[in-house]
Image (tube, rainbow, N blue to C red; front, side, top):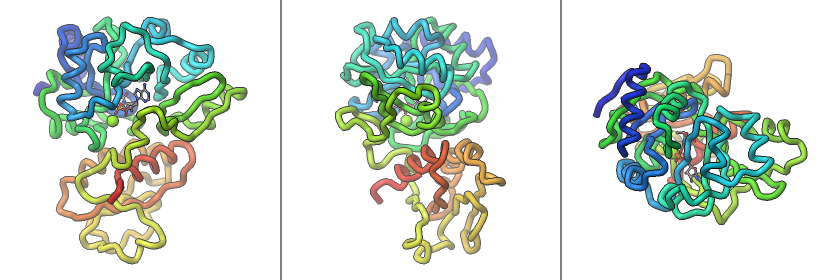
Length: 318
Ligand code: TXA
Ligand code: MG
């Protein structure tokens, strides 16, 4: 599997691969994506194969210009206003899809998740390819998302090229919303918060309950999970944990005694810094000779909501 530093030449090479129906892993501002030409169903099918992703799980389509939304989806006034305010950025908007998008991309749904990523490498790749790029996170289905190129080389096979753009700055996946009339439903928490959405469009209702009819990542109980058992600390399990066999992912730096490994993800309880480091530390700890990964909960404010969502999914049903 080839990995290249994301120079302009490398991005051009990657764009050729996309045009020829190949698969390119590339950085976005959230996590690395595993990209294919969204208009080529054979190319898209390779993504499902490489990720071992069930065919009922739809992909997000990445574009480089707001003008392109209407090529692939039916836009609405609210969607366009949100797009203008938050794109390029970590907001995926679910809209009714147009026929040009093959069914495999949207897992047979009538809707399509679409966003403009805020990363110069990703944007160049889309522009040079001249096609929309379907890209889920570049990890095996259910495993931790990659925030560094090395997470991909270690865990995936069959990728034609990995564009190495360093560590992704946000570290958790985009916020996903769907829009129906004057109601917006948050399907997955991410860096864009409900408060920010509400501030942008005060007259729109923002609901937090995932729409039961839609297959969203939030509906799966176990996701973003390491192979090791992850436990979120609470008042009940606190005393029972075998610290000598555990690594602690710490937010406050408190009560770290006795753990075999301690990872403090932020010095000043900065939730954005914590989010940026979380998946990469989970990847690292998954390789260590420990039995449990213990995570201290974080306040559910701002990106903290997305962090707790990912920790709960990583804890899964175990
Ligand atoms: O930040 C991100 O969103 C990253 C980067 C690469 O852009 N991508 C990402 O993709 O996290 P993925 O496939 O790991 O998660 C996308 C989720 C899927 O689990 C899917 O359920 C949901 O988006 N999704 C996609 N299209 C949808 C649709 N039409 N309706 C509801 N949910 C949808
Ligand atoms: Mg994913």
